[in-house]
Amino acid sequence: MKIAPRMPIGVSRLLRNRLPMPDGVVSTSIAAKGQRGLALRGTVWTGGDAAPFDGFVLIDATGTVQKIAPVTEALPPAVPVMGQVGAWIGPGIVDSHVHLSFAHPSEQLAAGVVGVRDLGAPPGFSKQWRTFARRSGMALGVCGPILTVAGGYPTRSWGADGYGQPIFDVAHAAVMVADLVADGADVIKIALETGPGWPTLAPPVAQAIVRAAHERGVAVVAHALTSHMVDRALRCGVDELAHVPTEALTAAQIEAIAEAGIRVSSTLQTFFSDGIGRPALQNATAMVEAGVPLMYGTDIGNVGTKPGVDPRELDRLAQAGLGRWGALRAATEGAAAAAGMRGVSGRIVVGEPAACVLLPVDPIAEPGSWRAIVAVVVGERIIVTTKVDTIGPS
Image (cartoon, rainbow, N blue to C red; front, side, top):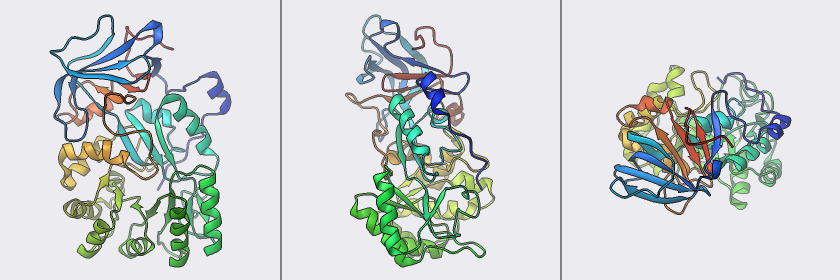
């Protein structure tokens, strides 16, 4: 169940404030006050299998990572430094499953999420989100409305107000996919959800959606929580699952998901908040054992979720067999590989735009540090959540 959506920030506000931010958060520029760059100081983890080390990340005035080095190397003179011994620098988090109409992307970015993929919103929302993403440097993927059947999920529940687009037949499927892609959809999402008296997309129609999307080079994500609907998703040739299913899957189904190369957004914590988390975690554990790529995803908008990095979701991924480091990789380079996501790698790389966070302490040792972020750096933009004297507001 989703909570009530928040109204998007109006165009007039965007014109008055180039980069709207939540209260108490300051958006700044590396080049403010003529600064030539910025150094982040602390324990550096560049992502992937890299080992953390005591050092710094040097970012130039354009927002490009210029140098990553141990603390024994000298910093250029007159470059302001954020962080200290014991602080932690790493790639920002990417959330593969959000609903931004319930939490504006500015709230996500200010809380350490440098890339998001919206998996269901009424037409018209994405234009404003793209404006914010372009101005902030945040990575963004969108799907538009969820393709469903008349009277199907989510049109009779949380998504009654334009979150679902009914598809009436095979011909309509091709037309609707073409329209969504022409409107800028980065990925297509279909609803394969059962419920009391709820109709569901027939296999030929779902297959037509997948075929039309693939013809246009666009992947398809399926909302499929039950064993039966996972079978349907597999037969239709979908590319991803929007959730770890909440009904127990067989070993054969898990193996089929692995063999098909299907990626899965986790969203485990929201199921635990709703009292149905245990079978989902069991499925996630079996997926990890089979080599299915799990991607960090929170399904922001559900009761119990809030904008930003959720340490509980990272803990659930760790419990599924990834461990804390594996969970962090699933939330960085893993989620950055989600269908429709562009412009973010989930790593800190010399020569690439910055997309990193500064935390007060190591999040592996203290996961709660994700709720106490000092700063987020995306390109030349710095999102400061505590006062920093060396950086002035732009």
